Length: 169
Image 1 (spheres, rainbow, N blue to C red):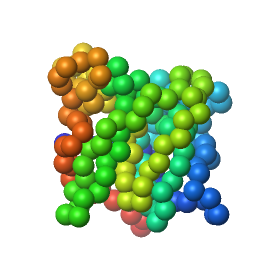
Image 2: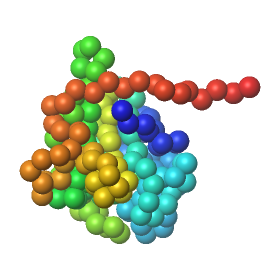
Image 3: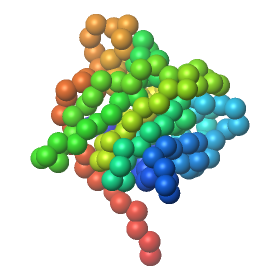
Image 4: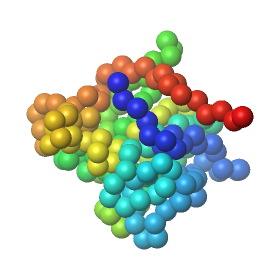
C-alpha cells in the first residue's frame, strides 16, 4: 500500500486548442526558478526533497509534454528514478508500463516529448520513494543498475483507492 502526499495529485486537462502542456500546467503549485529537480511538500515546491507526484490525464485527448517539466526527480533509471505510466484496464485496475527514458538533469531538459493517453496516470517519484533500503524499506522502482527489487515493475496490476477526500464545512 502506498499513499499519495497532500496536494501531490495533479489532474491534467488539455489547454484550449492544443495538446501540448508546459510548465504552467505541469507545475500548478509553483516552481523554484531555474530548478527542474523538484518535489512537493504539502503542495509547496521544494528542491531535493518531498514526495512523488501522481499526474492524471482527465482529458479526452493524448497530452504531450517534456517529462523534465513535471515535479519529481528527473528520470535517472539507473537509480530507480523512472517516471512510470499506469494504464487503465477494463476492470478498473491499472497496469504498470515501462519507465520513460532518462530526461534532463537538475537544471536543464533534453527536450524530449512523451505522451500521456486519456485516463492514464503518470507517477513521478522523488528521493524518498526510490531507494528506501537505506531506511529499512524497499525499492519502489527497480533501478536499471539492479537485477532485483522494486515494487512497480512493468506488467504489475495496481488498484487505486480514494482514501480520503477533501470536504468543506
